[in-house]
Structures are given as structure tokens and as C-alpha cells.
Amino acid sequence: MSIRPLHRAWWVAFAAFFALLGAAGFRAAPGVLIEPLHAEFGWARSTISAAVSVNLLLYGLTAPFAAALMERFGMRRVAGCALLVVALGAGGTVFMTASWQLVLCWGILVGLGTGSMAMSFAAMVTSRWFVRHHGVVTGVLTAAGATGQLIFLPVVAHVATGYGWRTASLVIAGAALLVVPLVLGLIRNHPADVHTTPYGAEASEPVAAPTPTGGSAKRALSVLRSAARTRTFWLLAIGFAICGATTNGLVNTHFVPAAHDHGMPQTTAASLLAVIGIFDVVGTVASGWLTDRVDPRWLLGGYYTLRGGSLLLLPELLGNAVQPSMWAFIVFYGLDWVATVPPTVALCRRHFGMAGPIAFGWVFASHQIGAGFAAVGAGFVRDQLGSYQLAWYIAGGLAMVAAICSVRIRTPEREQEIRESRDHADTDAA
Image (tube, rainbow, N blue to C red; front, side, top):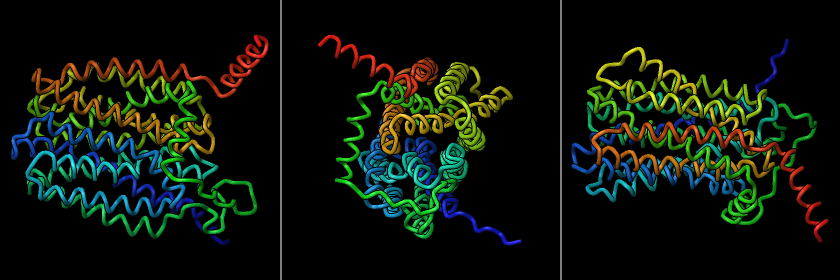
């Protein structure tokens, strides 16, 4: 019996997984460098957090333009160049002597590089290469972010503690360079480039690759203008902004220093974040499976509600040792961490069609805007009050707001009915 060769889509997804894995790991690393940088340079945590905020903002704001660039120049070229920019930014930090250089290297360069391989990249891979198992593959690629955190945070924390933060930065730069050959060798921009069809497609002939139209910035802004006229876009954007604030902005950036405030060793706290990464893989893949079967709006509402409750409890769980209650939080928060991505991608695809990946890029930009505000805001709260407690409570309340926004999203059919009803009313009035 002959063995059927693996569909090319799976090789593309494999390379995309490692690119996204690296991007998430590189972007998340500053969380464990806050204390070493504070100790060496004496910079305030809010100053260091400002660089992290720039990183988070650019990570999100780059995404829709990167998606448009990928439409015009191809996923392979954009992802390869992005990895080189990350290596330049991470490597450049070893020469810095002032805080503005941290903003330039880790904020701007690493932010631009990792933003070009953000979740809109995953959305484009799945939209172009997969018809069957779309939700599951989206979940797996989203989980790459958790795996990157799982791999890099303990390594970076260990290297920074044992050999200094400069060595840790060089490790990140080297890792980014190692991913480049994998991206260039395996990723192709469209199934038509290799004379095949998307995985699960019924067509017997390869689908023609889309023809690039206009400038990348023009295309990204055109999609934004169109999407911004809809109620769905703003509800998704508000919810995802809060999602970013409660994950990348707050927990990913400030959990390690917050735990350290309670006497927990930095390496132990970083390892807890890595465990969040383990369970994030499970939660995100499961969320992708559920997204193929359950209304994504209700999934988002449930995820945000549970997240808000867990954040309200976190201040009582932090201590100098890891208690069973903290393990329960870590497992639960890991399952919920980016489980929001597959249903959000599905809603963008459902409401915005072929423009879905770019529309999701703009929604993801709101995610990182929320993350940026939370990163600098939590640092300010810590500097002013000497504790992160208020930041946890605010984040918990905002997550409940995100849940309300999610369940208020209308189905495309309902939106069409409302538009037709308004059109009839306008006609009658005329």
C-alpha cells in the first residue's frame, strides 16, 4: 500500500509555527529583564515598562500593514526580513547605555520585527492554505506563542541570572537568525505557487494566486475604513484590547516582578509563566476545535468572564512559595491565555470575508494597544503605590466588560436584516 505524501499546507504550517514561536518568545523576553536592567542602570520600572509598551504597540500596529505587505510581496520575504530585524534589535541592546536606546532596540526594532509575524500572519496562513481543520490549525499556530514563551522565558531568565542580560539578548538574536532558513525553505505564499490546492479544498484545479492590488499601506487602510463602519469591528476591537491588557501587557510583563515583590525567586516566577505556556497550547488547540463547532461569540464571552474572575483572585495567591492555589491559577490562566484568538479570527473571517486577515490585523492592533497601556500603567501603579494589587483588580473588571462586548456581536445574517430594514425605512421616508 502506497503512502500518500503529506500535503504541502502542513509544511507551510510547520514553518509558520516556528516563526510564530520565535516571535512570541523574543517579544516576551523583556518581562524577565526588568529587574536586571533596573539593578544595573537604576532605571525606574515605569521607564523600562515604557520600552516594553512601545514593543507591544508596534507588535500590534505593524500587524495589519505586515498582512498587506504579505499580500504584495509574499509571506516568505516579509517573515524572513522580520526575523533579521529582531536579531538586529536584540543584538543591539548589548551596546546601550541610555534608556532611549532600550526603546529603540527592544521597543522599535523588536516590536516591528515580531509584529510582522503576529497573529495576522497566522490568519493569512490558515486562510490561504486550509479549508478543512481551519479552526484547529489556527489554534495550533496561536499556541506557538505559548510555546515560544515556554521555551524562551526560563532560558532567558536562567541566562540573565547566571551570565547577565547581555548574554541573554545575544541568545535571542542568535535564535532569530536560526529560524530564517526554515522560513525561506518551507513557506510558500499561495498553493498556486506549487501547483496545488488548499488543504481540504474540493477544486480539482489549483486556485490562482490573488493578484496584488495597490500599495500595502493603502490596502491596509482601505480595509480599516470599511471594517470601522461596522458594529462588529468595534466590539471585537474593544474586547481584544482588553484581552491584550490582561495577558501580554499585565501578566506577561509584570507577573515576574510582582511575584518577586512577594519574595518569589525570579527564575521560579519565570518558570510559572512557562507553565502557563504549556497549558496555553492545550487551551488554544481545544479552542480551535470548539470554534469549528460552537458560536464564537459565546466562546469569547465565557473566556473573558472566567479570566476576569481569576485576575480578581490573583492578589491573594501571590507569595514567596508556590502554593496549590497558585498552581490552580497558572493552569487555568494558561488554558484561557490566547484561547480567544481562534474565535476572533473566525468572526473576522465570517464578517469581513477575504479581507479577514487584514481586518484581524487591525483587531490585533487594538490588542497590543491595550497591552501597551497596561504595561506602562501597571509599572506606574507599582512605582506609585509600591504594589501591583490595584492593577490586578482593574484588569479583572475590564475582562468582564470584554465578555459583554463579545456576546453583543450580531451574526452576519442579523446585521444584513438590520441594514435591509434601515434601507426600507429610508426609502419609505423618501
